[in-house]
Amino acid sequence: MSATRILATTARVLNQVRHDHRTLGLLLLVPALLVGLVAWIFTDTPVFAQIGPAMIALFPFIVMFLVTSIATLRERRSGTLERLLSLPLGKADFILGYALAFGLLAIAQTAIAVGFAVWVCGLDVGGNLGLLFAVAIVDALLGTSLGLLASAFARSEFQVVQFMPAFIFPQVLLGGIFLPRGQLPEVLEKIGDWLPLSHAIDALNAVARNDQDAGYIWLRIGFIAAWILAAIVVGSMTLRRRTP
Image (cartoon, rainbow, N blue to C red; front, side, top):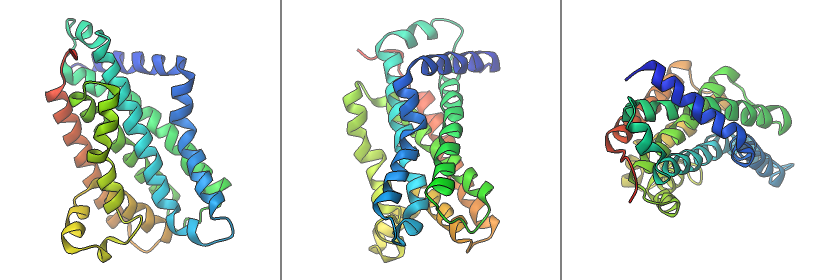
């Protein structure tokens, strides 16, 4: 791996996204607007205060997964990746460059979504706002890393969407959004406890309610970070040069 090649890949990806206004709008604005829609639906009810932190986890996670996986897959289908890898650029350089580029976009996306939820939609955060921001960033990076992993196996954009039931839906269903995990059947509760989105939701809820110490939050951030690292490593090992 080379820091120079990783940064060059990052700069190339960011430049491409900068000129793609629709993708940029999807990345930066749609999660915040979806959070705002949920807040609007539950106006004058206590529901948004209860599910708002989970929405901050859910929408950026899904958007980053879709955009990252499709963008990476497009590089392979167009032959760009094959040309890049004929140069002194390794698979790890490519994956890490993409992860860094979309990680920076995830930070901007998270800042907009969290700021909109707190200062426009009125989400009450009893704990440290910086910790809320940190968890939300790691959650968006999780979506990026899983998107990179999915793109290594998908052959088309349609297959990326097909991977959502495997990568996304179980985490949403077992993450505690619809029903607290402690009320799930024991087997499903155990599965949910090992899924990273569950820990992001737990951490965001804990910060918003201010009912746990910082150690509880950082433990869950570390668990999510381990998933991110594993997804990036597996994605770099399984990435193909070109889709037939």
